[in-house]
Length: 173
Image (cartoon, one colour):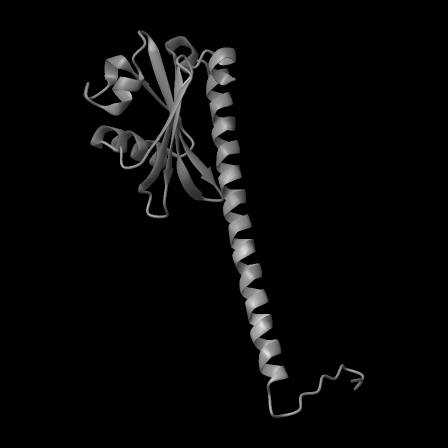
């Protein structure tokens, strides 16, 4: 588990729709072993940080207690440990942003390039999984639409009052 092996305090993922509006928010506290899932929990400060992560795409934003804009901000409450930092990155695959991930960890780790690369890889893996899921859903929808179309075509042919022939290029029936 990342909380124990890497020293992460907590993580969250905000999933976004095509208009980049949050549809889901999941939070995991590794110290207390608590997970929560919430909708409509976006405050203006969190929205600003999510927007920054999306606009920079490939750059992870580092946030510390000392530079939080407001103490009432949801992110400020997540970074409760002294000396903690948060890395935030957009979940992007195939030029589409699916959401944003934030991970709170010790400040020295948040400035470590190896940790930053690990979080980039983690974000890319999550984004690719979301992209793959979206492709599977589209494939299934197309397959169902094709099956329905074939059924309508077969029904139409079976109930037609005219005769229908099928011939190949060699004039075989």
